[in-house]
Length: 408
Image 1 (cartoon, rainbow, N blue to C red):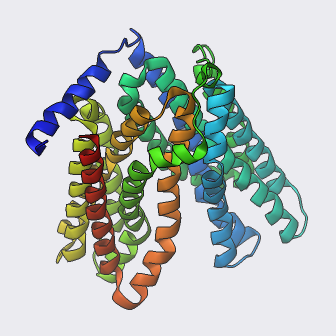
Image 2 (image 1 turned 45 degrees about the vertical axis):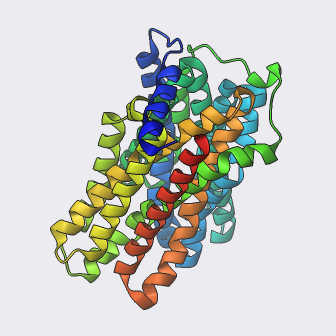
Image 3 (image 1 turned 180 degrees about the vertical axis):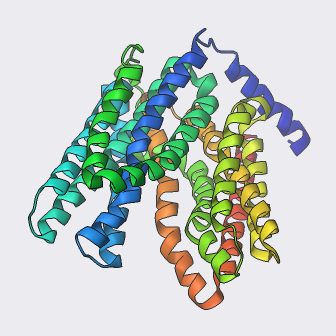
């Protein structure tokens, strides 16, 4: 089949998916689900901004331990994605989300204990590590539970919109949580941050507690062995991971790149990336279903690659700023676009496990990109890491081309 005929076929499939019944209050439900995710992710942003200061300045540890305390949460999230998906599939998405909020609240209690006890630094670091692990598990359960519950409530036809809105809520929670955490830390030390992390899950649950739960599809049979889930998720997940490389290099190295180039506006570069990312999610949330999810993913990866190439070759700051904005806009719709492919391929009984595994590809990419890109930057300079991100995005385009060819 030619590419010209494939595009209408893809749009026709999307139109058929859209034709399924959608609840009359779909937007109101989506707002409530997204608000719950935003409140949960506020806790992550708050914790992430203050833990380095507490470990370094209060406990007196060096940067390696600071990095460990920060990174252990992401590792916990990655390692529990499968568990979170299985919980949503077998016990119900409502139960998964409820347990996720419980874990977040428990992390706040552990953080409160860390702030109040007067033991030696080592035991306090141990309790802090426990708090970070609990928060990582809570993040995994909250996001996987919300995605599965929202898609089950609104229908598979709305899966792209669900992932767009919840993704924007995640990003917004991180962005707002960081300065909020720093403000609380400056006025109340770690105690105020810990209390907020204890209370925010209660507020999140209050937002969604009246939404009817979705019966676990696992009870109807048809759940896949995990090896088959991996086969379903592998190519969309691989393309998502390749997108995550660019996402990670901008977050980790754009400030250092601006400083090394003696340009002002490093903070603006991060803001340009984040603003473009969120705006594109809000504006283009329906595009994957309207224009074909794989076509949108392919174009988005190409735009991300173009933006990163512009940052790599930028002779002046304003072109680098434009490049970061393009990269943010390009990266924005890749998760929902490829996530729709996962929803289409996976049976409902394995949807939570499939979505959790799919998200783990991006988690792993972001975890690995930092140190690997740092190893590239040491001999070749900061420009080189943006070239690496662009190459990864181009490889992602090729993966999506394979996906589209297999669909035909």
